[in-house]
Image (cartoon, rainbow, N blue to C red; front, side):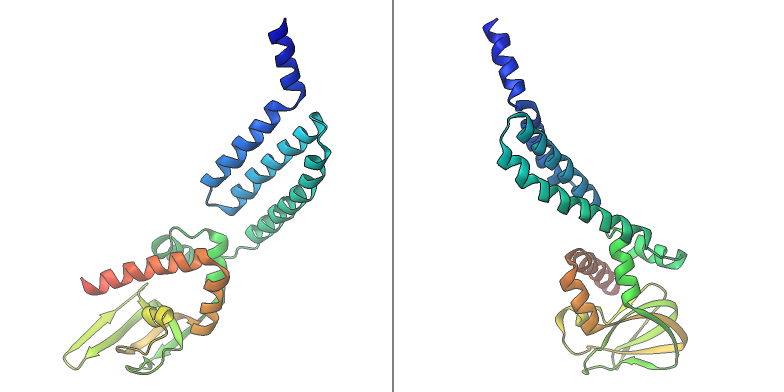
Length: 218
């Protein structure tokens, strides 16, 4: 009987809800998706609130109420962002092939920070001069004049000006549009602000650059 009485006191004291809260809180560290992370943290916070009520520890109850409100607001904002995602088939293809680790919301921010334009027989980047833009070839080809005896032709879904977008250095090659070329262009300063505000975009961009450099070296 004494053991059952002890167990009843444990339950009455909120032991289950407290330990479940810690368990859910620990599991939240496994999620990279921000919406899932927010939902898990909200679940843990609600369990802490239940514990505060059952155990009559009112400081736990009151402190977790604003935390629950913050997570609820964050979930609402994330759902709004996901509903606002506007990617056409081409943008989805770019995300899948070049930025597979970037979720649709973050890629949507990156994609719409750039602008699309068509150029013809135009020098896009000049060797030894500052690079103002990061370019993604959507249609057509460009000639990359690495040195006098080496010209490389790059086509669809190749990235140009990628190193300058990270290092800020001058161009190491001249890039010229071969006839008509459609590109997606990101202003270098605007792109730098974007990756400062969204580290997940920076990580995905660095991976894309690594892949692009590997392709150029092989």
